[in-house]
Image (cartoon, rainbow, N blue to C red):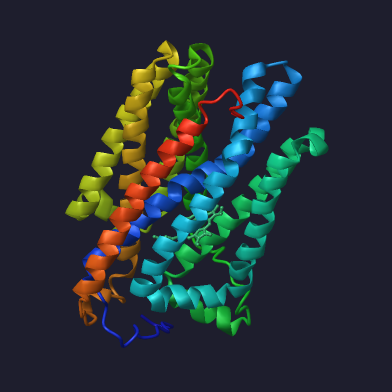
Length: 372
Ligand code: HEM
């Protein structure tokens, strides 16, 4: 390919088979994307409920708004810590691509850190200084949402710029090193919108899950939460069909074909996601119209399945795009099984610990002083 400047992979062999590293990358990204969606969508949706609760004397809306503000810092901290996981595997497997694009867009890229600090801190202010802030709380949350939306936009820029080394030289020639954004990328806006919209569907899943918590405690409020959550999921996902097709058709024809029959794995995943997506939409429609907890549960699990399989498709898209000039599979591998086993044991141990911690946290809310 002309104009291609591509650094070599690091000379040190991979510590594990590339297939395993990529699997951990995808699984890690899934654990990032769910809380990230709750943080991004939750920031705006909580503001909307607080505003709705204020004007219509709608007690449920203001209660939900407050609960969401209460839980927002949890979602953000999870999004950040779980962001490290794919970051490590991304650097390891796609370093020459990812490092270079990060340097090309260095200024906006590093700006993510101070932006995140400000937004994260602001959610704590909204949570703990609610009385002092008064009517300003929803607007602080909208500001947080705006910052998160820009952070996500920077991510989409980098994740697409790293796949197009043939465009890098232009940025250098034009003297834009450090300030590059990938604004000429044909899939940029559809891809970004697809991710940003998903945040509101997943926030709907979060709201409905609060309903599952209240199911046996306060049935009336719980039923209202189920309807709100399923309505968010349903409305946004129906819109997402349009955006999803826009994204699919913005892809270059040979790459799109991989999902439409060209590649077995891509096609199976695409079909599987679509079938599961339809099941989730039908389940949520029933959850909404019948105020049904059981249908919401079905909708919740199938929706999370859709997020996971789409996460995998997103990874395949990366490999389809770079396969002609970049193949980490060809690099040397020197598995360090002792370390991998230690990693596996610690990972499972951490998950068991977190489940236990989650259980006692949830239990601690069963007190008269429950703030949510
Ligand atoms: C609340 C702030 C954040 C938002 C809104 C956000 C949003 C996003 C979005 C939209 C993507 C997908 C971009 C695309 O493929 O087009 C993404 C990917 C990613 N994010 Fe985040 N992110 C946030 C914070 C973080 C943090 C703090 C880290 C690291 C510690 C992180 C690590 C990653 C990684 C590594 C990927 C790419 C994973 C892969 O390519 O498989 N994110 N993020």
